[in-house]
Amino acid sequence: MFVEYLVTVLTTTYKVPGDIDPDRSFQELEVDSLSLAELGAQLEDEFGVTIDEEDLTASTTVADVARLLEAGGVVLPA
Image (cartoon, rainbow, N blue to C red; front, side):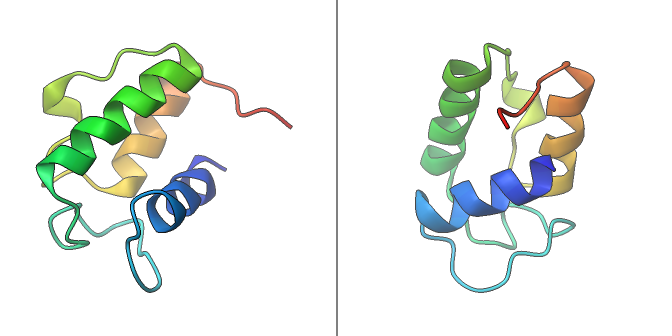
């Protein structure tokens, strides 16, 4: 559920090309540090969660972020 949401955000907002494997790191997906900071701020604004710097690094994967959101009790709107 969150993986699909994050993949959509990465491809539309951050223009990450191609098929996104959720187990690849942001570094492997060529997402730069500024985009990661913006993604963290977007998730905080949209879902009211706190994303720590160490939770969103170049070595973090899309699946890691999805698990973080789920663990934080975030619910995607229907």
